[in-house]
Length: 478
View 1 (cartoon, helix red, strand yellow):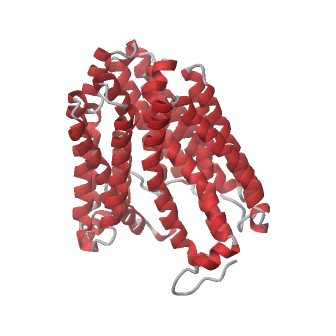
View 2 (view 1 turned 90 degrees about the vertical axis):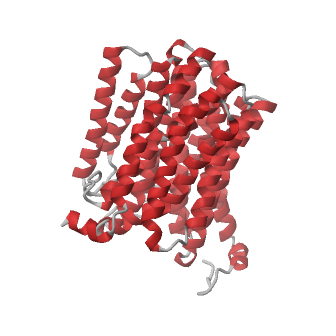
View 3 (view 1 turned 135 degrees about the vertical axis):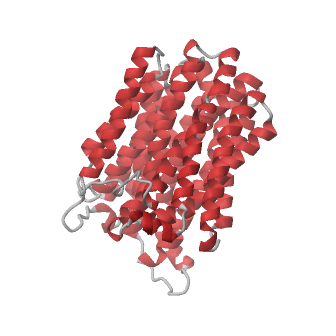
């Protein structure tokens, strides 16, 4: 392992040893997953035009996130029994296979099967990238490596929509997935060659073995999301209501089972209790994650159908939302703790304003106003999330702080999956169940964002609770 200076990282020595090159390769898994995640919305109009199945658009994100949640939870445990290199090769091959299925799909149903396999591979690649840092690199350099990994997410947020738009305009939406097929296959081959260190070729069981896998909880989550998404495919009052009710019961069972399994828990105790900063904070994460899915899933499709806005323009708008998140996160990172309350509340209000604003600007078709709403939504996340995460982790009991730190991104993914499924219900109930046409798109654009405004309000109220002065928090929990 490369020797690291106590004052600064010896990047030249790190490169000479091969560790930096190895890290760059490992981070490619994050780039593949995140770029694919942000690319799909941009190619959706062209894809739906060829495959039909507009009723299943919400599934494209829901099922991808579901696969990523399950694989991410599994990968961190499998490395205790299966070598890291083997895990990485299998994850990359899964990802490549899923992308290939998407690229060659003759129907929306087969495309969704590919998205599930892609999600499994991509979620595992991200989890394994973080495991690799812990296994293969000196602890002294971890902060720098994690910082680079965060920058990669920002690059992917920008490049994904643009890649999808450019490939669709120049060739075909299928070529966008073809690129990821080649990327996954190349990473599988390189994993076998590059990860040849003893740390990567031998399993490394932790003391007492790996924590048990949460089979029951994740099974309930999977069934719940599928039931909610199914409720919107063929709208019928009784059928859809029953599927929705059973789906919500499944979500409740998921959180209940997770709370009852201390050795495999994904979330801290008192998860949604507003009497604690942790509970109010996780409520805010869940509410805003669910409420902000609509634009990412349906925005380009609506803008193209209603206003003939070019795909490249919609790609820029989605990229701008992500860029605002990254830039504002950096700008407020060094804000003093006394500003924490104002920052969290301000970010929550920005997100809610973006959600409500889309309900007006998407039907209107004004690109500048749509861009402002996207910047509000992304910028609100960028401002609030770092401080919200810090409050959640710092407020959790010491024994739960590790769980709390991992719970925020996990809750985000669950929120995205549930939000995409709910958005599908609203979109299909508003007109897409009859197919894609101008009148249906106009009706969907009016209701799709208004339906999630109440959740935006819940997120703002939770922000007020999570950002109360410390003395009031202690009184509430006493």
